[in-house]
Structures are given as structure tokens and as C-alpha cells.
Amino acid sequence: MRKWIIGLLTVALVVTGAWGYNQYRINNQTRILLENQHQRAFYNLVGNVENISVLTSKSLVSGSPQQNSRLLSDIHWQANFAQDNLAQLPISHVTLTRTQKFLTQLGDYAYTLAKGTTDGKNFNSKEISQLEELHNEVGELGEALNELQKQVAQNGVQWQEIRRASQEKLDKESTGYMDNSFQEINQQMERYPTLVYDGPFSDHMELRNPKDLSGKAITEEDAKRIAREFVDLRPDTDYVVTDNGKSTQDASIPVYSIRIAPRTPNMGEVFYVDVSQKGGHVVLVMNSRDIGSATIGLDAALDKAKAFLAKTKYKSMVPTYSLRQQNTMVVLFAYQENGVIVYPDLIKVNVALDNGQITGFEGASYLINHYKRNLPEPGLSKDEAQEKLNPALKIESARLTVIPLETREEKLCYEFKTSYKGDDFLIYIDALDGREEQIKKLLKTPGGTWTM
Image 1 (cartoon, helix red, strand yellow):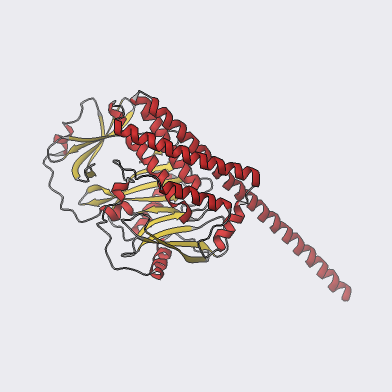
Image 2 (cartoon, one colour):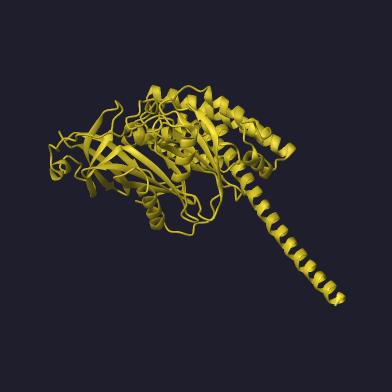
């Protein structure tokens, strides 16, 4: 009997040991995979910024509007890729805020300039000055990242240690020289002057008084509850909600910054949620997790974005355009009033194509611009407006929209989606007097494709 018990215990120990070794091997493989992903994201970020520096220098010396359109489009995409790679690094949300904003504005400004070159015009003196300034700022950012890259090569870096320290700490102290270095880069970004241009991320647009920031002041505990209820959490995971501090970074909407992470660290998933101190409106959601290979189609991802937004306070929103960026689908929603698309009231939703999770949300444009409008009746019919178009254009669709102007005014326009010799354009005809207000060229590059 004793021998039988000893034999049974021996077998149990062997099985337990084998299971434990297998778990160790799996965990070690996962750790190596994540380490490699973070390392790749960091080196890709350095490459993205170097590419932007080269592209901006080429744009400054080019005398061809067509060439500049291509260069600026590439800058736009490189800035988007840089944001994606930066978001994958396990560095705290507060540390990266200004750098992310700089990359957002840089990409959007390049896109805005690219639209201006479609009519064959070169840059004016103000645009050249702004582009030179951005080129210098990108150069400084590149130098800082290259210096950091040297430190990584000399000292090595364990990204998982940085992640673990970031997840375990409850204060705002740094988590090592990597966090310190990015903090210095972020402070460097703070010193740059404001960027004012005709675009949704321009500083002069962000500093407007929000029109839809209704409600009373909320507490930090209120913000935690609102954030947890809003984000797309996995049902089988226990999450911990902590505060990430107050922020008045964007003076128009002071927010509470909330951090939501699994109690047991899981594949780097951390949500950062900004909730307005007034009214408790969700302004921004970011999920830092690594996104795997696509397993769902773009139509399914669009349905996920619609279903998510339908559960929020943001009603009467319709998808306008969507864009695939690597394994993420970005969907732009605009407010619809009496069948009219109101472009100033925009919301952006990011959907991960590996499992359909909502990994990003931006609502600042909506909160700043939304109000109940008394839209006028069109002075022209759709057919009358269409007569104002170049007859060489092929008309694909038409609808009534409200568009923003540089002066912050809004115009009721017919939006005509058109094509000409392989290029796609959106042309806006004033619905009251028939004047051609705006022309936008839909840019297509290998980095991204319009899907709607």
C-alpha cells in the first residue's frame, strides 16, 4: 500500500512538473513575442520620424504641386504609422500626450496642404514658413529618438519590466530611463508654438468653447464609473480602474484621465479614458494593446463600430468614411440632422480587426461643435446644383451636407462625389447660391485605402 502511494505521488509530481514546465515555456514564448513587438514598434517609430524628416525636406524644395501632393500624402501616412507605433509602447499615457498630439497635427496639416495642391497651386509664404518650422521640429524629435535608440543599444531595455512597473505603480513617477526620456521628449513638444491651419486638429479649433459640454461638475469617482461603463471591456476579464490625474492639456475641455487595466496583466491591454470634468462626457479612449492579424472583414468591423456608438449618448450618427490602417479600421461618424450630414460634429471610432474590439474613440470635435441647428431650406435643387459642376466629371453620388469653413462659419452644401480620369473628388456646391465652395481630393496611397 505504501509503495502504491509513493508511486502515485511520483506520477503526480512528474505530471505537475511537466505541466509547470509547459506553462513556463508558453509564458516565456509569450514574453519574448511581446518583447519583440515592443522593440519593433520602437524601431518603426524611429524610422517613421526619419521618413517624415526626409519627406518634409523634399516637399520644401519641390516646385511641382503634383509631386508635393504625393509627398504630403506620404507624410500624412507616416505620421499615422508613428502614432500607431508610439501607442504600442508601454509608456504611460500622461508621458506621451503632447507627442501624440504633435504627430496628429503634423499628419493632419500635411493632409490639409495636400488638398490645397490639387488645383495646381504651390505653397504660399505662410505655408512654407509653417512647413519649415515643422521640418525643424521633426528633426529635433528625430534626434531625441536616435539618442534614445543609442541608449537602448548600449544598455538594453526590457519592455516588459517597463510595462510591469507602469501597471503596478499608483503614483506618477517614472518607470526608468525610457519613461524619463519620453517625458523629456514630451516636454520638448510642449515648447513648440501652436499650429493653426484649416483642419480638425488645429490648435485654434481645439481652443474653441465647446457647445455641447452640458451638465454639472463631476467627481473623480464619477469619472471612473463613466469610463468603465463606456469602454469595450472583455466580459471574461477582471479590470482595475484607477485615476491617471486631472488634465487641462486641451484648455477647451478639462478632463479626468482614467486608466483601466486587467487585474492580471494580459497582452499589454490598458485603456486610457479622458472624461470631461464638466458633464462627464467621454472625450477620448485609447487601448494600448497589440493588435494581431485581421480575422474579421471591414463590413463586420463597421457593424461593430455602429453597434458600439448606438449604446452611447451620441445619437443620430452615420458613418461617412472609413479607413484601414494596418490591422485597425478607423470609422468617421458625422451627425445627421433631418437627413443632412453635419461634418463639423465628427466622432472617430477605431475597431481592431483581430477580434472586433473597440480600441479607440475621439469625441472632442463633436463636443466642441455640436448644437441644435436651424438649417435653411436649399435655394437650389440637387439637379440645379449639379449643373454648376464641370461637365467632364462623372457623378457617383450626391447629398446635402453642412461643411466648416476656415472662418469657423458653416455652409449648407450639396456634396457631389465625382471622378475624373481615375482620380476621385468631393465637390461642394453652396445649396443657397450655387457657388463652388470646396474641392477635396480623395487620396489613395499604399498605406491606406478609403473603404466607403
